[in-house]
Image (cartoon, rainbow, N blue to C red; front, side, top):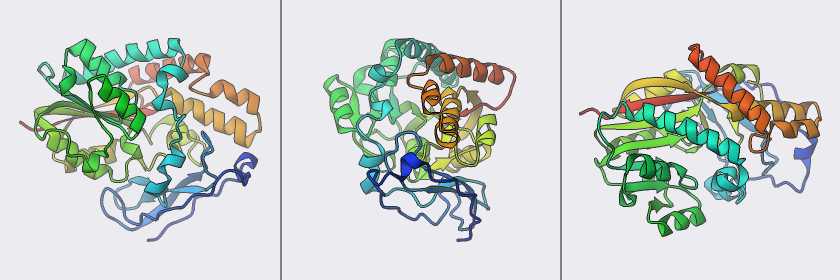
Length: 337
């Protein structure tokens, strides 16, 4: 493997604390999309958000297909470290402002309406990969009338899965790549919102989901967009879309399309979505770790910084209406009939 090193950021004092663990690293070597072995250095940085480890991590770009991936990355044995119990997606209703949650609910209704327009029929079944606290399962039950016995969710938190199963949802603590609990050929809609970037083998996930879909079924993936303005401005280390070291794969329209088509799916739309958290974390990291403005940086925490959350959401919505490529990309793909 050849690689040109990206410029090394200075180690933030907060992350040099020996009390923060130095965790194991696992080499990847081959591109997850095309199998290539030639890479350029793309970006590097630390766990600026949660400070779960003090390792420095490197993103590399495949010179064959342009895919970007973290290499080396944390091994499976370290997932409990980099996804601590207080990880925000496990406790959204408790961690996030009620105003922000209401705004998200409105945006989600709009997004699901757009996605379902490509299905062309009433959905009878739904799977959400990386379902978190189950808010999308509940949305499909309330808005579309899908019964709980046909609402499937995959999540890696034992407590979350147990709670959802207690409510009657078909939740499983399994990885999509190896999951055998979803009926093959029987799913009308599968969603994966800001999850594909977390998995070890995204191409294998796409193939697996393709096998779950009924003819004409829809697979919708939302993920950070490498072609966005904020991704370019904060490319070297601080871009919020890196979510180091939890994001292992980063996409742009070209590579996302190639992965879905390689799984036998037809890409029917590419939409650009708001990415307020990426903008906010980018400024948070810059202010805190480069400029040392810790108190000011707290205003840019997406979980607590409501004024800037509203500002950046509106900014990206306006840019999307103007046809510009925003911080997140939504690919909608269909299983051939």
